Length: 119
Image (tube, rainbow, N blue to C red; front, side, top):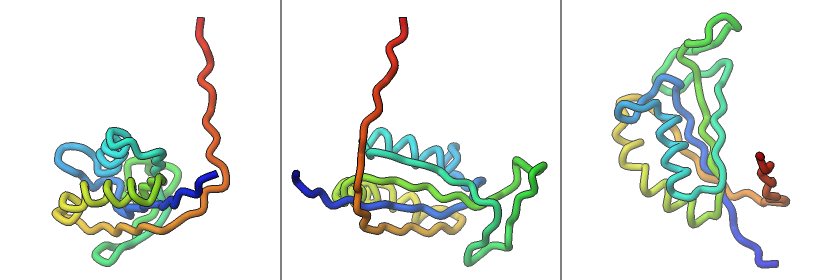
């Protein structure tokens, strides 16, 4: 079995950050899908802060609060690097701050699911 080098790209931002008219996390996930990235997940944080912000936290009744988000993408190292190069100019131009990391990851299992047949 050929060993392919994989990476995880994480974008740390705020739930209210925007890329044009779209929420940043939505824009990144839709663009990742269009670019053929294998998988994407957005995590909403309960509490956090960045270099230029105050501590933001969520209580169970505050669902529209400005909160930290992490956008996580996984694919081959080459596809992750190419996708980062595609979106980095826009991320760099954001008025608010963000942090992007790319780390190697060892994929142990990547099992495709079977879509159910509907009649």
